[in-house]
Length: 332
Image (cartoon, rainbow, N blue to C red; front, top):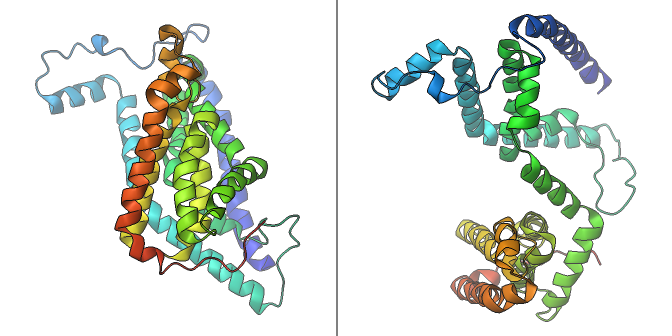
């Protein structure tokens, strides 16, 4: 195993050196490209400045704008590569799984055991190559990954002051950062365990069978979106469904039906309060909507819709529940 690690050390160190050199070279190039570092040039270029009203069709307009602003070509290429990346995400994920399985077989063949886990559910020895490839296979991370070369290209073409001004002033990250923070907190053990205990109580009414867990997660989980926001509720429901439902290998049609039902239920389940859903939050203060108003006018309808939808899906797939076997051990 050490030989494998040493084989990748030199390429990684070489890439780090190249990145440092590029970063050092970008500074003088950025300073030379910017006319005035204290006053960044307008970016992106306003459409009114192209003067292409009479350029012709869409193809001619794109060609004219690419010639007038060379950065448009680079940005379009990066966007195309990001789209192409999404089609290869599944391939990356398969490679990550194959490397992970090979790593586990190596551990067994060498007679090694996984590292001591600090707590129940923690991960043991992992393969860093598989983890990196798994990251590149995550669809949600693809466009975030390609933002890095976009920012580098922006710096090289228009200078660092322009790139910095664009990131810090032109683009608003408030809502994306809020979603990331909430989803991260929702994935922590205390929040997950608390929500799981609430759903466990409801599932206990049905004997904690796979069907009972399915109904509980798709009913109680979406309603949590009114308290901990939609991203958090979606994260918790997805994690619990993966453990209590998808690990039991249901049918393909049942899998997709459950996923679609989860999206719909979480979308409407956030309307019980006036502070958890961004669309409601934007108008609640203007229209004087409080929690009572939301519950009386929207909340009970959302709850009714969730119950009816779950009942319909339960009846459609009731036979498939019989083929699902609960896990042998359940974390208390």
